[in-house]
Amino acid sequence: MRLDLYISTVKYVNDFVWFQGTARVPWLSFAKSLPLYALAVAHFTCTWGYYTLLTCLPQYFKHILHFDIKSVSVENYKVC
Image 1 (tube, one colour):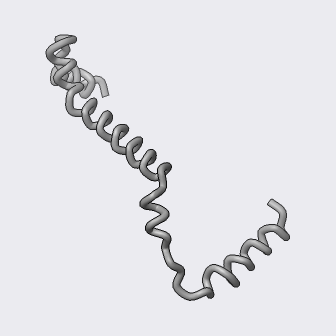
Image 2: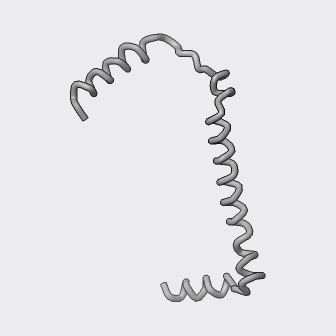
Image 3: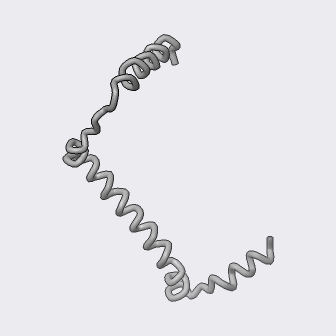
């Protein structure tokens, strides 16, 4: 990174941003922001899918694949 660009950016932040007093947060703009809603929905669905997989995977192994998780975990523990 160029040094003069860095110095000018630091000067701008120190002079303008920090010493302007209290800045107002545009909450109304955030509330009307479509990308914010898209991000919230994406995060919710990703988390929902992860926890659904996390809670249902042992049942899938047991009932569909007929795979005993306890015996495999004990065997893997003996190898280590």
